Length: 113
Length: 114
Image (cartoon, rainbow over all chains, first blue to last red; front, side):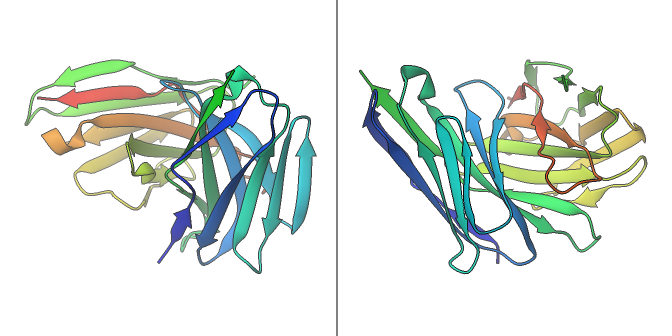
């Protein structure tokens, strides 16, 4: 089966660093995505990894290890506006040859002053 | 800027009604998706389409159907709404040609079936 696990909730302090982990067991892996979703809003794209290693984008970085089925999202210099849910999604090749996405349940991050 | 719009932000329907949720994207994307999002379950794929008139079942297609007559529009149909279809419905679209392209999501439709 296809499965993605991430912690349900995390809390961190403004200015700190937080790491949100994601582990997956899927077949036909074709990339891993992180999305941010504020309450009541649509998810927005944060990062994409398809090869092993670290991708850095300003205060946000994402890491992938395909052999371990593991990714993390690193948020530095946390701000209050980073309070949101963070969704890990794996893209897999569908039987039709197209892609589909499998999402984790999301990690709700609370940033405290 | 990619824009994905959905016909309603909030919808209340009665059990047994036929419900249409419309999604329109303005960036000529080949792929379009319908998800539902429920607390503790995350986003789950209902149906997706990779071209006009083409559709594929996602992970939870039961009770739903879709229509894609034009490239920019993807409709989700609840043939006979039931209370367990109360949920947030999110539409997304994606360009097909290169693997690094992400999905863009619409604002969502919160459907309540009473």
